[in-house]
Image (cartoon, rainbow, N blue to C red; front, side, top):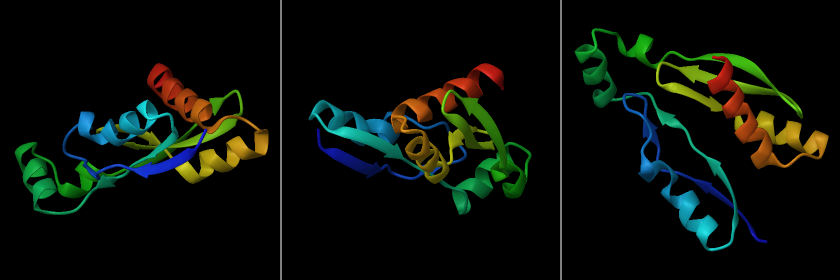
Length: 119
């Protein structure tokens, strides 16, 4: 199977990710590629400022993030947490998976599952 690394359109932190955020991954998986999804957020700009003002927040408080560690069967995965949810720290998870000989996709999925279940 051919490996394929994709980046998605950058998501704004003022709204939940939508199908467009994962479309590239789904399309490539359907073509038979092993896909690792990497994404990020855009935390700057007028859109964020306006959304924060409507919510009675500052842009800084709306986009503030903290980091937590979640346990997986293959070790600890570091997660970025914002008001909109959490995502994994890709490089750390990749290194952890490689060190344990574990499938990266399984580690990423388990980290997200553990975050949802415990936090």
